[in-house]
Amino acid sequence: MSGDPIWSNEETQYLKALLSFNASAPSLSVTPQPEEVKKQSVGEFKILVVGAKGCGKSAVISKFRTDDLPSAPVKRDDHLETSCRHQIQVDGLYYTVEALEYPSRDLLSDPQLSHAIDVTEAAVLMYDIKNRDSLQLVKGIYELVRDTVGVSDYGLLLLGNKSDCEDDEREIPWADGSKVAAAFQAETTFMETSAESGENLERIFPHLGREILRIRQFKLQRWQQFLAAEAATQETKGPTQPLSRWRRWFCPWYRRKPAGPTVVPDYL
Image (cartoon, rainbow, N blue to C red):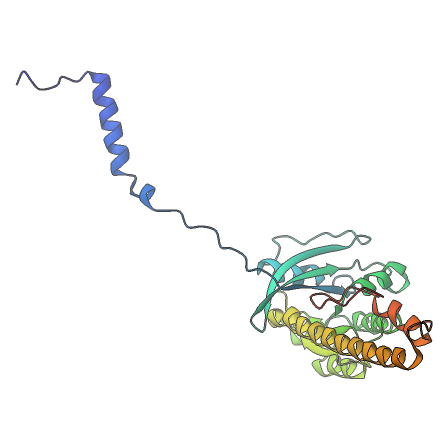
């Protein structure tokens, strides 16, 4: 028919390409799904991870953060701290954990370790169940924690790593680790884990998170008791009396480190 359009070779090739493109692109009509939105955290936990060289600190933290082990051994500078931030859920609420891995060189003679203890609220004391010396080192670290901040206001978890090793490789029985934790002058939880298999890894940081919340609540109650006692003292002595010796001692101690989500008044 004379009314039919006549296409040039170039136009014909263009139309074929266009029709072919439309026919093979149904996926373009699918609306891209938004990335998963991270839940809003209601607070943070700063947790120290410390132990002998080679006990698996980096592997545990990597597994905690990504649910996977690094493809190659992680080389760490023995003098530098490393940290990661990851969200966990505790009793239905979301918290951000900042896990601080402390370098393993000269731990007991490093003055910076005391500072790391002072700015955190709990610690994972890690040892290698295939190395008895690593458990002895943990005992020394515990004593440093006790002397730096006291054990009643600091969460502790004794963690034996590499629980998936062969029986003939194990130097430290489970019972020995449990006895060491029981001997600490604190409510120290003990467990064994394997960064390789992931055994118990999901329990470590939520458990310490609950312990930190318990300690914060205890501190808040102690603070409220202190304020009530001060108010009673002021009623007796009058508002012009100088600060009591108890108050001068208590306030700097209480402000040793941030209290986290529970905010303590800072008007003193």
